[in-house]
Image 1 (cartoon, rainbow, N blue to C red):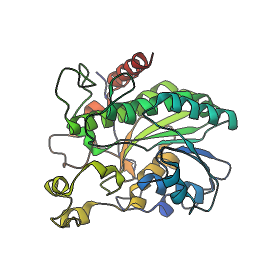
Image 2 (cartoon, helix red, strand yellow):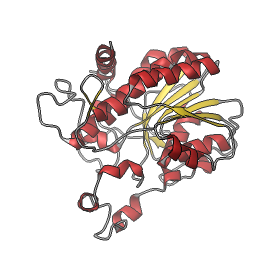
Image 3 (tube, rainbow, N blue to C red):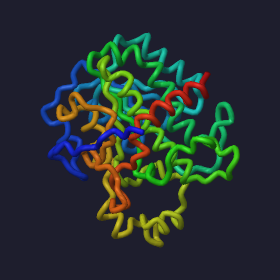
Image 4 (cartoon, rainbow, N blue to C red):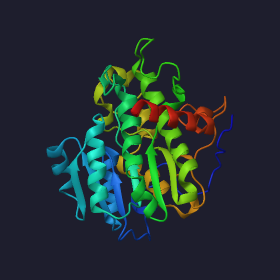
Length: 321
């Protein structure tokens, strides 16, 4: 089996670089972007940064009222319309609405996601974390491919997570039909799927002008943790008994703005021209994980395996047929 080589780029940025640093000197005027989850957490900061650099940004929203409040503060061109990643008919309809309005799409940031939620089934009795985090974005991306191919240099960024290192794809039981549901394993395989989807997309379409990357944004407290109580976050070392950030988290965690920096770097950096399919963290290409890798860094070999990327692509198409 072949594993995509990971090699540091020497980007000059770091774990807590700010969006303004990443986009300094970049003019995105005339560029069109789509940012899923672009009205909350690091997605909102991604939208804000892209608009500040001149891009027109489409934000699909599941909660229109919440989105209106958040996006109303941004001075620039932001277009919000309804879409629910758990409802593939709405995803297809949303993509078609973009196809009707735009000739090309320069940036697709697949940022939205759910984490460690109670067992929920959507669609064809699919496990919800895999369905929302991967299948919803798979359908959105493939539906928008005509616009991405028209851009003459589009980039797609998939939000993965260091959580991917907990599990490869559960190839024989993706939807927990044979084994008991375990929320963190389900989250982990969905984040592995995000990395493999970026790799597969890049393998299939880079020669036609579409590059794809996956990113680990870092530790950030956002609405993503909505399903975790403080007792569990305390056990993870993130908070203290009062719900405040622990000393460890204060040292490691990023602000939401810092959390979107790696996304922006993967979406715009000239250093990455001619490459793709790479997993990035802290505004650089991640190292391939070894037995000595730190707990919160590096990418597992299973998340950059080209054979697995193609296998996941075929399985995803079969699920959606």
